[in-house]
Length: 179
Image 1 (tube, one colour):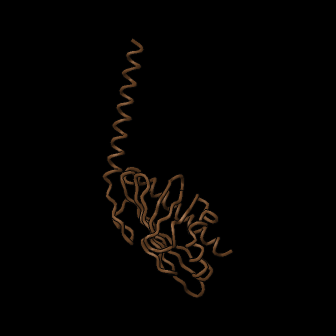
Image 2 (image 1 turned 45 degrees about the vertical axis):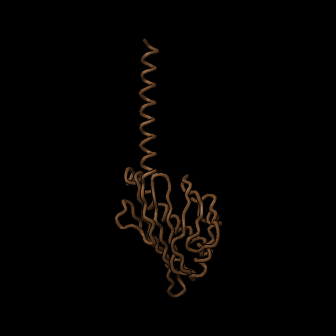
Image 3 (image 1 turned 180 degrees about the vertical axis):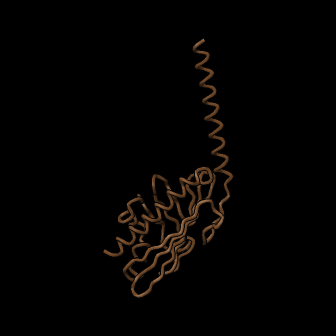
């Protein structure tokens, strides 16, 4: 009797796991993300932040465009690697907060704008950085949108995580640039 109950429980658990796996696979497979050069204003998670860095724009730009060395100054990034030049169409791989990400540069205008897109499990992000200079100081404005089935499911968690991550990016960039 005990073995039969255990067997039935295992069948139920395995059935639940299989249904969940099929659901996740289907959600991932049929997700249709639209690549664009600007964030999606209707995305469930959006962050917009800025910072003033007390150095000329050329110095900030040089540090920012050196993807292979992001992990030197951006403590949340692991193993960044760009697959070519820092130009539109080039992709780069990196890890952030435990996620493996492959992003593609969509927009690159020297000392002005960088935009990239990238999917990660259950999500898709559009990330745009704007650089302006006034009186030898650089203002960096960042916008990012995130969407996807997992983002919708855990919207609050993703919003908090993205807000914190962008604040760290900007602060780390400021510290590195002002050295």
